[in-house]
Length: 319
Image (cartoon, rainbow, N blue to C red; front, side, top):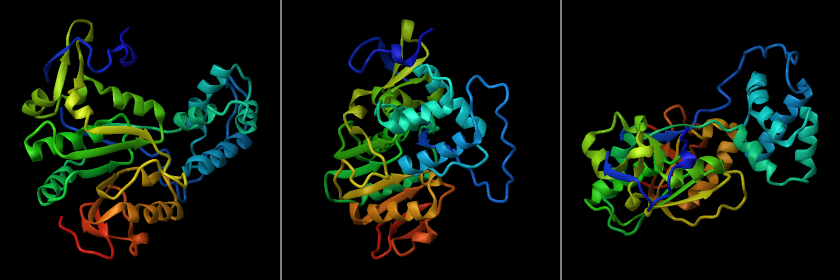
């Protein structure tokens, strides 16, 4: 059966005629669980020995490593995600796996651990009003190039939606725009950089847009589409952990998209990240958040412009 991994890399065939609506967001692993009684821990009938102490240890490790506040009701999700890693390493118990992880004998396993516990839900032009606001904002800017950071790029739908918006604003496939697309999960970044998607991912997109910005697969690639190379050239994909003290990027940015990722973090962690965003955003720049997020607790840093768009608290804005 054909998988995305089997598809040709950009520049190869057979992707021909153009064929998209959409945007990228992340589904949190930790929906609010306040006042919810955690279910009784049940480790019976499992392939691997898995105890409550192991679950609590996973919660602690993922918080320290990635800032993710894992809900106390996610016993089964953690088991199903990490059981794959135990199979891959031929281990018998979660304690064995976690001991190995913390011992440092296999440093690359930390990446696999984080990737396994990160869930991605993505679509093109999700929360479409944000792209309309960005388009109006870019039309009012005189400086070039315009720099945008998409900090939760997932499998690429959001940064490609940004690139399409830029092309439409400037009426060119080579607009004066630079986009950095980052994510914690290296697997989804690789998929995003490849730019290949199942055709149903774009079935609700305006047909004119599809024809202009996508190539349709033929023959063995039937049912898949690939973004045009011109869009890929506007985007630089890279791994960024928002908890790292140094980020491999340089501002200032005219716009920053950090949508549906803050819901992974507790309020102190959110504030710390927002505080570090501040010097990277231009005085008149815009910060876009997810529809379920608000930064009221960081009012000293950012002020709301409505519709989950924020500006620096200390300045005006052009949005």
